[in-house]
Length: 384
Length: 94
Ligand code: SF4
Ligand code: SF4
Image 1 (cartoon, rainbow over the protein chains, first blue to last red):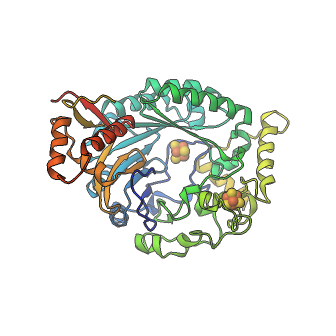
Image 2 (cartoon, chains in turn cyan, blue):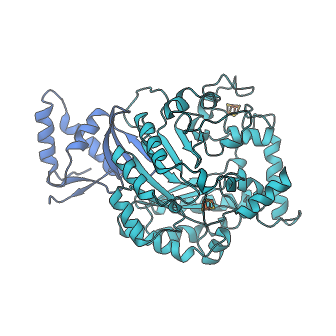
Image 3 (tube, protein in one colour):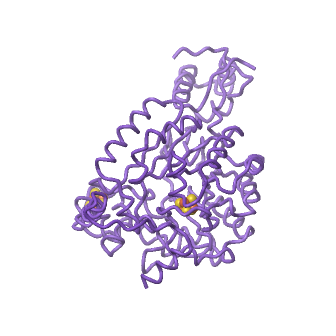
């Protein structure tokens, strides 16, 4: 978040609360950020309306201000209007992060009167065929209709496209679509390779050439739409020499509450070993944020190993992403191997060249593993 | 920038403005983001309304803060920045 004219040095506050209301979703995106075993978190295990309201109140009291309702598909929750109304009344800026599936004209209006501030609609591509293929469902026409409705009813609208090898070359069509739909903001985010996207990385990861071409077009449109539509282009870090300042630091700004009440410093963190993530059913948000061992595990820099520990840049990127460090080096305390100073940097290069080999047809391409309960079960059986 | 002092100032529909106790300041909220405002920016924005001209706004601030020097310039500077950032729009008085 940007700061203008303020220099007060505050203790970390959970400014950003991400409420993952459910993992249920009618779509099947192969880069979904939900856990591989999302199907284990059944609807019965989800927090109730009352439990969510308590979480909203407690987090707000601690300074949370941005609230994202996400999932899964948050529209699956029938109590969404109640939660929006409560959040609005508490003073949150409320963001609905949705695929648009499950939305209709009257719900868009109902949310508006409950005080919803903004709707982010995700698209899988700019063409009906590819969009429906990636989403694993016939959703494109409905998404278009809902995006138009969102604007018609006066919301600020963000359109979000996750970019990967299959759709990145259509970036110009994507941006033209966003202009036609009068988006206020467009988020072009390359898939982050965890969970489902990690499983599908060889099929999803764009090449360096694809990225360079896409970036050029994104910049061109940034200049062209200045003052009308803001384009966020999130560069993938696999081709970089320095990691991203993941989550702005562990337990610094972000608090994610998973559908079953598990509190996470980042929605990917559940995969990290040896950490027991607290649950809002057992503890207050205050204790979770300030006291729990999991939220303190990677605060500050005492946990760091070399080369981060003595690195002059550690205040800038906090050593990168813990999940990426764990995934690629086996130890979450290592430097994010995206960093060229990391002794494990070649792991990232190996991932990139494996994906490149598949792209060039030199290695066998597996079919995309779509996110659905059957595949989750199949994956579990073959990985345990 | 050439401000027309007869114009009034409207907050852009893309932003929400509020006092935020945990930050101890006024903030502008927008999709997934927040801008913290300093005291004078907060004092200016909270007085903006679609039926108040910039001239009236400045007058009101001068009455409220009689000791402030260069107030008019500060208001001009802020409105310029706010307009460039898309936080506010200028409109003919309602
Ligand atoms: S990424 Fe796709 S499948 Fe996953 S929750 Fe979002 S819309 Fe559903
Ligand atoms: S060594 Fe660690 S702190 Fe230094 S730039 Fe690399 S990741 Fe960041």
